[in-house]
Image 1 (spheres, one colour):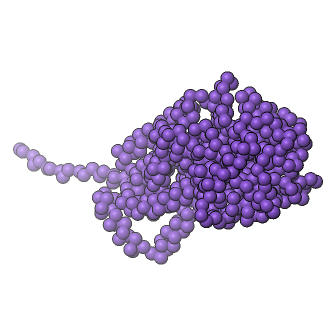
Image 2 (cartoon, rainbow, N blue to C red; image 1 turned 30 degrees about the horizontal axis):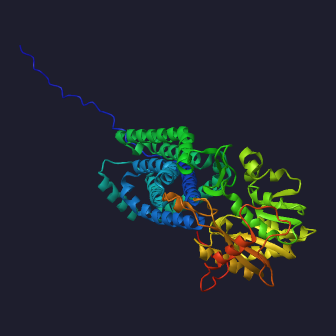
Image 3 (spheres, rainbow, N blue to C red; image 1 turned 180 degrees about the horizontal axis):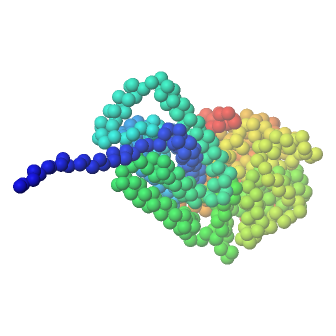
Length: 572
């Protein structure tokens, strides 16, 4: 008997539903996002300040360079905000790659800019290119972070990027009033963190990064911090928004960026030495960075040294005596017991004043103690200035000359018989206020009634507009002036911004030094030498008369207007 076969229906094995990746809630991501916004904003402002500072040092005219960098960067930030729209669908991977690129470009910007100047002789176009690139990347940060925060807490589906974006738009159209208020609050938080970070970055650059690390290393370290902050946020907080391939890509890119920045940091000293040799030649003997500027001394002990301040040749050992004799000795033709030297931290002007037996005191007002320290201790510079700072008649004041003079008239028991302005060219922006009508008014307050005031005013032949603007400013302050100049200078010597000449390879600096001798009111002073003048190598009464005629030939048909603090009229 055949038993009937009973077929049992197959049992269905119930599989657990697939785990769906849920993004972290908005409140959980808000704090780490704000921290990263703070850090990235600080890094971004450091990049901007690095470009401004290095451009002012390499190109000159800090007002122009700051205007170029900031205006180009702000424009580029707007472009970056618009371009960020195309990355909203892949905001996580887009933000990660954007921060890696910003870290690499911003971190290496200072080195590339300095290399372009040292080896190519031109850095303006590189400056604009970096300003554009960094601005675009900074401008895209906030829109992408906003997209990440708005997407937090939603369950990502399997829609294509285009469908996801359209879904996001539909969801946005259906958003409740509460969600809109939350979005407004998020925007406020993002911008608050951004502005506070910019404040910290702006203060950290001059007070921490620049004095401790320098411009090149400071930019590289900032780039590393930027890469760690941006990459860490995406790979940790928004890792569920990344595919496996995207995650691997971000890890690899950030490791490469950090490797490049770390390698550049290790090699930065060798790079800086090679770049210095490309700029100054092979004779670099001393290179120090003071709190205010870079000071470089070239030449050995067997040859006259050259002194560079922020890349500008300030003292050429072979012919500095022509400059300093012409600056100091015409002003000593009269009473000269008390002498005030504004600038002159190299000690050369003090050396010339101390050659007169009748000089009782010489006060040197110098802004940078590092220059005076080097002039005291470097054997070649100390020999060149005849150990002027060891003379007991010399008193050094470390101060801003403008601020010091504002209170000097009330403090002084005696006024000065001679004031000598041994300053960089007026075309250099930090020196502009010391060539203003207000500054010359302060000088008049500390000068005796018969005192004489000698001013270095830049080149009379190469920059006549600047030279005669100094003359007009002195006359507006109540001085009567006598123009003169000194020629025969070493090619390449310049107290002012001579970068275009040196970068072009012509080796030609301005053709002369221009000076102005001034007295308070009355007739212009006589141009001559004191009866007790020492024996000079470059000056006689005849050469001074020829120098006056040579300067007068550069005078234009119309007098330029004077320069004031609120309306400076000097250009580089």
